[in-house]
Image (cartoon, rainbow, N blue to C red; front, side, top):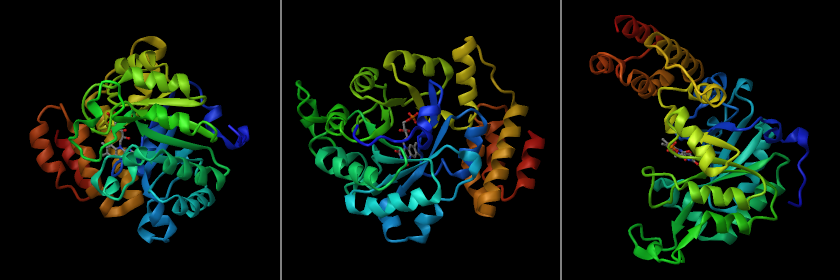
Length: 337
Ligand SMILES: Cc1cc2nc3c(=O)[nH]c(=O)nc-3n(C[C@H](O)[C@H](O)[C@H](O)COP(=O)(O)O)c2cc1C
């Protein structure tokens, strides 16, 4: 690493291990959800992915995604894009806004991102990855991190057999990316333990995450399928990672961070009662309302369905929750069930 980041500028270095991070999720990890996760034990939270191009062109819609509360800190903003030049202004803007770190997306398989050559498909061009990361590092004093998948087939055709070659030569591995950027001052890497072709299902490739940990001189966070404290412990053991990135496992249970911390210390944790769940759900709804007014409640509906999962009369309750328009109506449904 040639650029030394001051310890005082690098919040990552002051976090206890294992580090539990809220992974970036578009449409989910908005300011309300990030605050809630911090309150319930997240050590660091990532924003939804934000377009570097949007920031470069001063898009008001993109800038709108960058609002955050001091209560979220440390908060890492995640950028996506494919043009190294556009990342320069983007990095400068988010630095000025007071984020604690910048993450770059090399893992997103969403059509709207890969369709433009961004996200995980960047991994097919390691020189381009290098130039993007270098431009960000060169234009911010903030710690820079990256998020990757374990591999991607070299062939752009999704169902190509190219990646199936026995010697692995049909794939670009995250390990190759890590080796390529070894002279850049990257502080952390979150590894989604699945390939691009596996999208969001299937087992995590613990071995590959471990291999990255062995070859990457800084913080490694393992990500994928962490839905309960036992799996969290298993993931840490099998990957030897410095921490975990939690994503869909938080749906309807943002307190999973606390449960994991408790379990790692005591081998026990307590399931929340429905009364406790309703209390957190209401708190979440209030935060959403504070930030986005009525639109926040509309966005909250999907979370309310997550919170109600597995409860008695969930089917009837959900029919009412999908229609709520304000806090009073949410309270009314919760009083009924
Ligand atoms: C709704 C949704 C949105 C996501 N948005 C992003 C994103 O903006 N940036 C990113 O790097 N990954 C994104 N991801 C991927 C997650 O961060 C995570 O890598 C993935 O869901 C695997 O973890 P899990 O199995 O615990 O869910 C998203 C995932 C989901 C389900």
